[in-house]
Length: 465
Image (cartoon, rainbow, N blue to C red; front, side):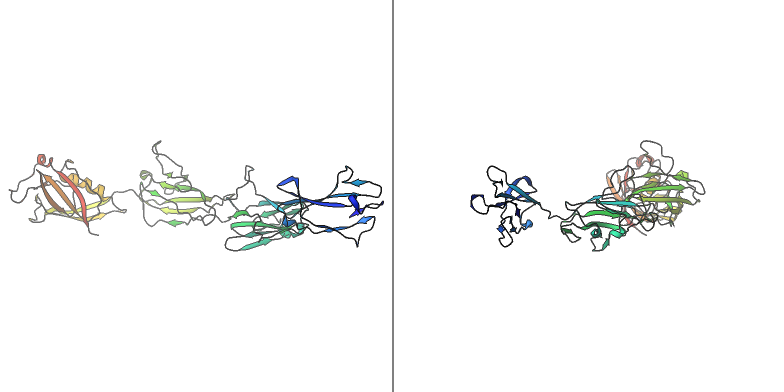
């Protein structure tokens, strides 16, 4: 509308002129011509007032920030805008097509640093979630909301009545399980990996909802459940120098952070196990191996008594903030630090053909009557020790790949370039002499000197369970 008490020149070179322009948020300093038709409304106009109409679709202009009309006109006394060297009069309209903008301020850790959105929040403690709202024309405070959603499709909405603070600058939520804030308003959507959208509408009707595709989404992860450790009695003994690995159920959310292991030997006091590097120091007490939280316990045989019950006490903490800490789990166990008991038949070895036990030919039989042990025996080491005694003074070189007992061993002997195959069903610690010459030769007794020239290779060929 143009208004002047002296009247407005309607015709000629000084008649009213309206030229539309628009400004982009990408280039706010340079106006661009706007394709907008501005029409005169004679039915509403008089000599002193002139009315004009236009229709503007701001969304047809990409990133429109401002719409302006440059007006040139002259009154009946010759006063003007835009004529006779005067600047035109500018009518400006600021454009707001955007919904309210939202900024999320996460809680802070103990050092005052923002907690990253990859860290789970332990809702057994209060956490303040802050959302700042920005809009050029302001938003409707009472229409704000928050929607927590998961990939499963589960959604949990909250309204202003659930907010701890709600003002022009934004709002705050107290995230906490029930009653942990001493009566203040709290929210707790449940544990899980949540995406959070703020819903709002500004004073021009621009609205953001949970279904707005380009609405900002914030990751808020919640884990309020501690890891668990089952107390138990181990059914089998632990080897005196073996390792033991704690079993921790971390759950499906925040990963593990630390496992603490205490040890009580017999009825003694509790000792917290520490890491120890045997390459750098003497590790005289059970210690921790590996990196947290994937640690295991290295036992030291001579600190345990065979008949005493021992106990591990294990506590685990996850990586939530603050950490969820487990209830300690007690694991009772016994240690086997005794060697196996072995009993052989008498005589311990016989020649398969002659059944004699003093001079042995190519085929031998030996019987192991009893092998009493609590743990699995390292038969490779056991057989090697026994077989080196077989021909006395560790004169024979023996190779064993793997063995169990009772077992059948195949012995390949090389003597004066003659190869023969001996069958042995078990072994003993006694000395014997062996006749390794082929049957076409006269049987002789091997002396120790001749045995020195033999080399035996022993491998498993058959195992009987």
